[in-house]
Image 1: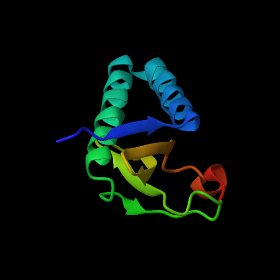
Image 2: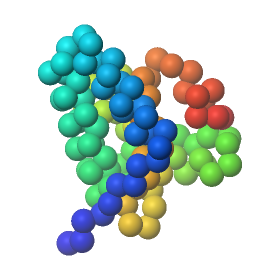
Image 3: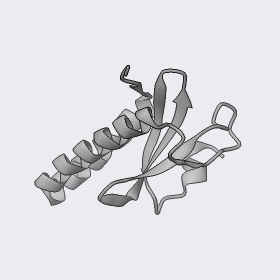
Image 4: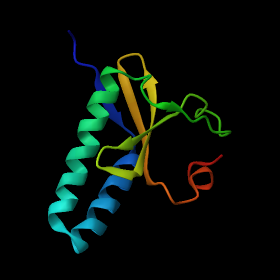
Amino acid sequence: MKRRRVRWLEPAERDVLEHFEYLLTERPETALRFVDAVEAALERLADMPLMGVSRPFAKPGLEDVRMWPVPDFERFLIFYRPCADGIEAVRVLYGMRDIPAIIGG
């Protein structure tokens, strides 16, 4: 079976780096587990892209966005878009933020 791919958009990469840096100051071992959990979740979502909950936004191009919590870090949410060969990671955000305002919806 062909491995489906994860394509990272720049905002998603930036989000993970910011969360990692914040967690690193508080609990370094947790920061590493967070990055591993995000990467593992994205790989799983690439294999089963419709697994997440549909979370469309009003902004053009984001009508097909889906959402999935980061395992063991459920307050962090992965926003992604299914595509022909896998998924596109759109954002990784802390769930208590104003997500529609951040993503543009």
